[in-house]
Length: 129
Image 1 (spheres, rainbow, N blue to C red):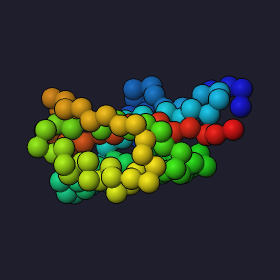
Image 2: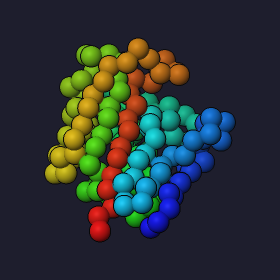
Image 3: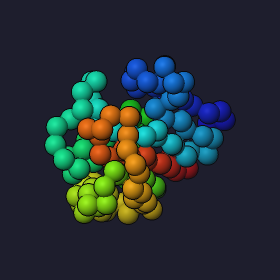
Image 4: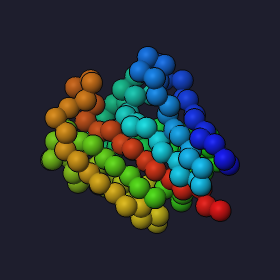
């Protein structure tokens, strides 16, 4: 690959705000934009754990469409609105990535565009040689 590849998911915000769901750089680094638990325009029900699982599912579905799986994930970032949610979001991360062990960050933020959202995640993957 010699050029940047951009992937859209069809989410309305991509067109409205001018961004891609994922970008693959020459050399195989794949960056997936922030993902929440919004699926088909609806926020998935449940608390921080369920929102984390759904959010990571959105990111992993994007990677799957690019021919990559969870084993390709090298970095995750988890943004949460309350420090009390650390354990639940961490539990979801462990269930999905325990065998992979990507580098990870969990950051407490003041909020998201919809107050029902309590988790947003970003994923970076690497397509090896």
